[in-house]
Image 1 (cartoon, protein in one colour):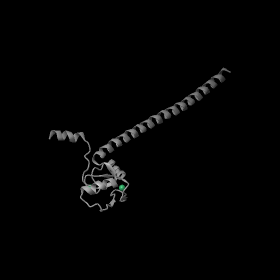
Image 2: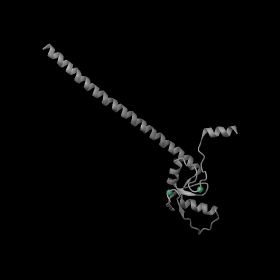
Image 3: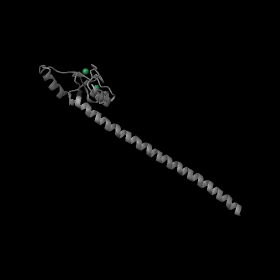
Image 4: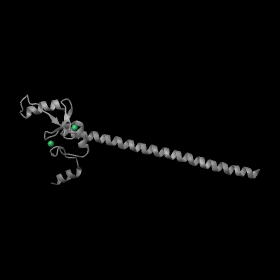
Length: 150
Ligand SMILES: [Zn+2]
Ligand SMILES: [Zn+2]
């Protein structure tokens, strides 16, 4: 009888051990997945904040307007007669830019769909997709230091 009980206790211990092990594994994987999820969310929020900041810097050199507004002011400053009608094709997606669509204009007077130029800019392209003129100088502390020394 005593031997029997001893065997039963060992069995119980083994079952308990395995059970505990399984529970530990589940808990560990849960903790791990929570940690990984949290890290993912943090990188996502950081990069979207970064994107906002970067787009604000783009706004400084390339304001957003509708093609209609832009053309009305640009036509005047180029001294073009009122009757001239502008027809624009976005060089990024090769689609026509419609009057009511939002555009971004570069210093070289080339215009693109707002989203198209934003994608181009966020891909670290800082020159005009059409004439390759630089429209934005990325902020770089090292370059500034260099300038100070000169
Ligand atoms: Zn486009
Ligand atoms: Zn250009």
